[in-house]
Length: 136
Image 1 (tube, rainbow, N blue to C red):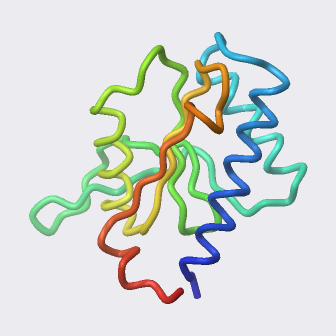
Image 2 (image 1 turned 90 degrees about the horizontal axis):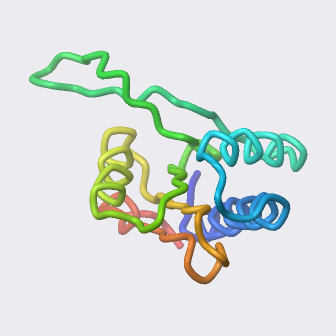
C-alpha cells in the first residue's frame, strides 16, 4: 500500500538520481540524453520504474490511443517528467498534472536539467486529490 511517507522516500530517490546524472553531465544536453542516463542510474540502484509508459486517454467511455507517454512511472505511484529547457512553462506543469490524473497517481515530479542546481531550481513536485486521501 502506498503511503505519504513512501511517496516522500520515492521522491527523494528520484531527485537523487537526477542530481547524480546532472553532476556527471551538467546542463546543456538534450532531454533524451538525460532520460537514458536516468534509466541507467535507476537500474544501477535497483529501483522499480517504467520508462516511456503509455498514458491511456479515456473519452466518453472509450479508451483512445493518443500516443501520450510519460517519461517515468516510479514504483507504480510517482509520475516523473523530464525537461531540458531554459524555463519551465506552465504547459509542462499542466502536462504532468494531466498525466497524474490519467494514470490515477497521487504525486509527480517535473525535473529540468538545464539548470545549475537540480535540487534548488531544477525540480518541482505536485500532488493531486488522490494524495490527500493517502495514509501518513
